[in-house]
Amino acid sequence: MQIRQLSLKELYDAYEMVQHLYDISYDEFEDLIYEMKDNYTMIGIFEKETIFAYAGLSILTTLKDKRHIRVYEIYAKEQKYKQELQNYIEDYAKISAAKKVVYEN
Image (cartoon, rainbow, N blue to C red; front, side, top):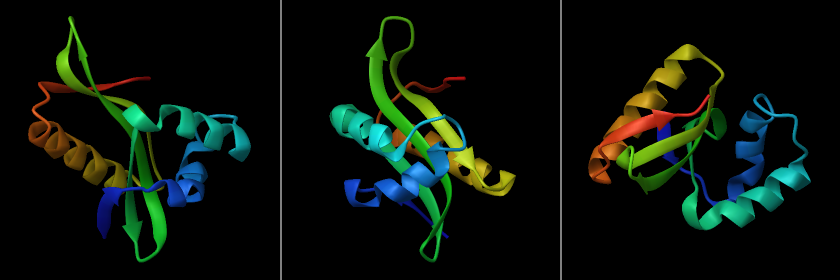
């Protein structure tokens, strides 16, 4: 199992996950990702070359939450991958000096 950031070359892998969350075409997804790319990180869990979980997040600073990780999307094919991804995001927050992780619903 490998947990890592996805590159823009791996958009289709990300789209495979996001289409389970939103009614969105690939073209619209691609356009939005390119628009957000400076402040949006895509993280995935892979087994060999197959993606099993995805999270889209940003590091933000607000008056309410201070410096934090905002998770906009999280999707996993199996619960064990979702838990692994959440653990990774918690570690990523610590490394990024974020005070907490905020999940959007």
